[in-house]
Image (tube, rainbow, N blue to C red; front, side, top):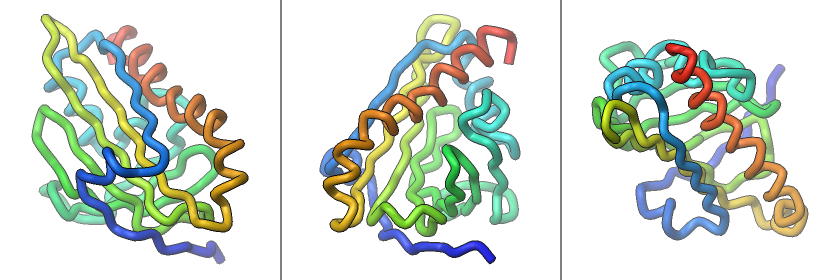
Length: 163
């Protein structure tokens, strides 16, 4: 049986106050509405490449603030709750349970901005490791930052190929 570890809820302020904030930005060769359609779909970023293995909504549609989902990425499973949901503009969520016992708080923010006939895509991850993992996390953080950045690179390739 899978063991789940609880995490604390966050709000938008966590993206400015978290001990670790990783921000990635790339142009996607698609209109914001098309990128949104992919992000809000049942597959979400799992369709973009190999980093995100699986995404499944655990709340019935229509989806919005308060919606929950379960995902698998980078070897861990997480259960998330959306606290921002702006159609065609992006969303924010925090993980409330994870199979990785490392985090006190973890959140992701996705922002879609029109840029000509494409989208400027910004992905931000905010993390607070548990106190007992603070030192090892400091060593591991650059590796995690690189691995999470693949989500944006894979999304850029996905839309360049006609996503």
